[in-house]
Each structure stands twice: as C-alpha cells, then as structure tokens.
Amino acid sequence: MGEKKKAKAVIVGGSIAGVSCAHALISAGWDVVVLEKSSQPPKGSPTGAGLALDRQAFNIIESWLPQPQLLQQTTLPLTIDQNQTADGEKEVSRILTRDEDFNFRAAHWADLHGLLYNALPAEVFLWGHLYLSFRTSEDKTSVTVEAKVLQTEEIIEINGDLLVAADGCLSLIRKTFLPDLKLRYSGYCAWRGVLDFSGNENSETIMSIQRVYPDLGKCLYFDLNTGSHTVLYELLSKRLNWIWYVHQPEPEQKGYSVTMKVSSDMIENMYQEAEKAWGPELVRVMRETKEPFINIIYDCDPLERIFLDNVVLIGDAAHPTTPHGVRSTNMSILDAAVLGKCIEKWGAENIPSALEEYQRIRLPVTSKQVLHSRRMGRIKQGLALLDRKPFDPKTASAEECEELQQKNMPFFATVPLSVD
Image (tube, helix red, strand yellow):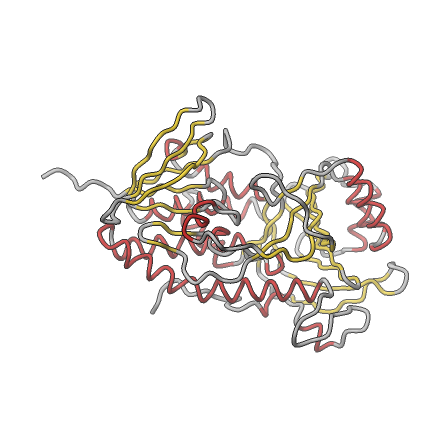
C-alpha cells in the first residue's frame, strides 16, 4: 500500500494571516500553497507599521518557529497601557489610566512577517499570483482556484481540498458568498508612520520625546484630546511607531487597499493641524518620519458565518476590525491556530465538521472583540454612543476613564482554543 496522499489547502493572501495559516495547516499534516499578488516577499520596511502581540498569540507563534527565541529577540515589551491627556498648554500630561500588567510585545509588521515566512519552505509560496475566482466540485469535496501569473499574464488553475481566504478586509472570496456585505466607515482615518532614529539617539527630537514619554520601550501611550487621539510606542532597532486618528469624510478609494497614497501637500497640512492639537515633541517625531501614510479605518458588523462548504475565512477577511483593541494581528494568529487544530482533529475527510467547529469557537470571540474595538474607537474619538455622552478627556471622571483600558477587551486574558 502506498502512503496516503496528503490533503492540500490553497491559501489566498500571503500577509500575516496567510503565513500563520500555512504554519498551522502544515503542523496539522497538510500540504499548503499560498497565492500572493505581490511579486516577492516584503523586504525591509513596507507600508506596514507597528503591532502589538498578546501573550497567547506570542506563544502560538513561538510554537511554529524552529528557533522560538527569535520572536523575543525581534520584539520589545509593552508592559504598560497608558491613557493621558494634555493639561493646559499641551505641556503637561495628566494620566487618565495606567495599567502596569499589560504583558504585550511590540513588533514591526515586516519583522514578524519575515520570521513567519522564513520558517516556511520557500516552495509553498506562489508570488506574483493574482487570485481571480474559485469553484467547488459538485460533491463539495474539492475546490479549484483560478489565478493569473502577473509576469506572464498566464491563467492557471490550482486544485485543493480546502480554500482559505486570508485576503484581508476587502476580501474578494468573501464577496462571492456574501455579495451584499458592506464595510462600515468609522468616520475617521489614521495617519501612521515609523521614525527610524538609529544613529540619531542623541538628537533633540529623540531626547525630548523620551523626556515627555519616559516609559518608551515598554509603554503603549495613548494621548487623548477632545475628539481625537494618538498612539505612540517604541519598536526594536530604534524605531518609534505613531498613529494619529483624524475625523474626515470617507475618502474615495480606487482599487483594493485601505492604505491611501498621500501627496506632499497633504503631509504638510497634517503637520500644521498636528501643531494645533499636540505637543511639539510629538509633532517633531511626525515631521521627521519618512513617508507617513493614511489607513482608512473600516470594520463591519459581525458575520453570521465564516465558511461555506470547503471555503473558510480567516483574519481580516473574517472580521474586519478597527485597530483600537490591538486585535487584528492577534485575531489572525488565533484564527490560524484554531483552524489548524480543528482540521487536525476532524481529518481531511470531515472538513465541514472541522469548519463548523472552527466557526463555533472563533465567531463568538471575534464578534465581541470587533464590537468592543469599535466602541473604544468611538469613545477615544469623542463620538456619540447610545449609552453615554461623548467622551471628553478634559472633563471625564475616573470611572468614565476606566473604559479606555485595553484590559476591558472581551477574552482579554485568554481566548478559547477549543469547544471544551
């Protein structure tokens, strides 16, 4: 008797959700192929930026890596979650909340992606392959994916037992079985940037930002103003990650991206607005950052289902979310881990049962987390909520400020990995 043929998954999307899923399914004994439209793996620092890993996601990633210590070495601690507001003339900050048991780690998107990607066999990836469509067999046991090889314009077909949609919050695969689903624009966008200050550690910009934010290197800082807020934290290799959430009408966006190209005029205008809202130390960091960019902030009401036959959604494709609960990457990693465990438990011959269990474990968690993150964003941006008046950091009571803390996120400490 020959060896039983391995089951095969086709994963569309080579970002963190996709590479995480590749790890989880290979661990479950499957063959995988990852289709990604980018022509090559991201090198250096793309328009990704900082992210924060919770302890559970961190441990899962370590379990996938042949050299797990590398994850610790490429991240910095985030042990403090602090919300503060400028008092008076933007010179002195008043602490609204401070949680010193935060226990996250800060990573740069490209560093984390590189770690995960380099720990996979290179032949798993098909770079420069644009997903076009899929069809499932009549008996629902196999799936055929059509893709275009961008370099040659050739159309190819790839067959598998399972299709994993890791194609982001604007997922084309999700659109095929949920055609009427609309993303919800939050009412604001985020200016983002990463300042690399290696070689400039003693510059006035860096000395002054460290003076005003003394816990950089271990603290996730949120600065709140009336109707706006910023985020600041340090990444490994002398980099500062900053975000500024700004109310604006929904931008016209061409193509499939939530990242917006910005002109030098837009950047200059952003600096001028920042000077009216934030302290000079933070504005200087913004001004010295090369290539700041805009993320358009969307989420969507929780989906009722995240699989159909042998097609399954993971990551932002399954639950587009706002970034306020530092959940997006963590949810993607947990999705991948749970999917891998369910597939391993049920086997290739019982994919519908495996996907049903994956949905039963993940949907209640991600639905609550997406809605909580939405609420946090609306509070921090001073927007209306049905059950409370708009939050104003200048006048908020200690009790009102409690809601700002990350630890209020549902399933903050531990997320279930099984139905037991």
